[in-house]
Length: 201
Length: 179
Image 1: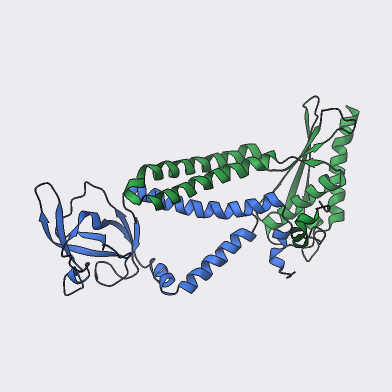
Image 2 (image 1 turned 180 degrees about the horizontal axis):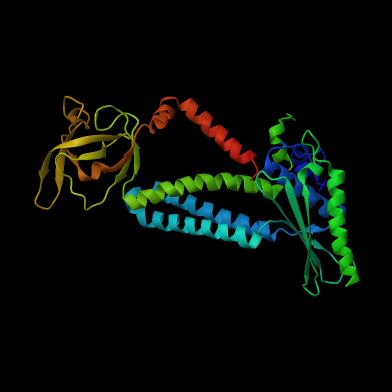
């Protein structure tokens, strides 16, 4: 992630990957997001897995298509003022709300709470890669953060899961700065438990 | 670079997340647009929600009232009923009562309107040379109303800088804030 080429020079100056993460400790969404991001960092940087974007891309695609319907409706109505544009508008509006329904179903059933799908490439070069998934939950106004690591074996397609629930107070200091060391230890422990289970099987 | 802390979240985002933030903004705008267009289709009116801008219909409607309109072809226009119409070449819809109607055998009508609180009929408002309104000028008939809420719209139109500032801040908030 740090090795961007000069083409993205401006983006590189803008991004602040190395600055310690400081958020408003009372903002539940920000807390969860920063913990999720940190967990992602651990898996991607420390263990060198490659992120698989299919899940996120699916959601982006659904949203893009919905916006396209809205844009078509806008342009058509502009070119053919109201009463003539009624059928096209009706189709666009209905399609838009169907896409919204799709989106809700997708986020609830496909994505669930998964925020990372990564692939552990087999160093021996054999085709079968293992998949590591991270999902998490943090209830509103609650301080118990649950991180779930799931490992899917490339060959047997078996999935093993391990989760841990801890108070967010264990990972943030009084100012809202994320203490990466503590959190990394926690994530690594979770990861290694699953990895060793794999070896013993 | 400026160190604006509230942008920190955005600076940590990768390309996909940035695109999602923009999409998020687009979806909110699209949802509002689709609801408006949907209302247009459902009610058959090109402006299903209007704000009463003047006191010309007091005591029935006051400045700032929000009106919900429908414009069904089957609704006959009769003397004494309130219609919302637009004068050719003007954007602003007017809410007044029908005073006189001339009706042809095939159902075509020409009608004259007047605000309850005005002392003269609307001929002074019509286009120069126009003495009657026709069905095509009608935006709809009021079917329901909510008092006072429209004052916000009036304020936004009277002080456009305020409107742009509010919209800009809202847009910025949506773009920067992560779900």
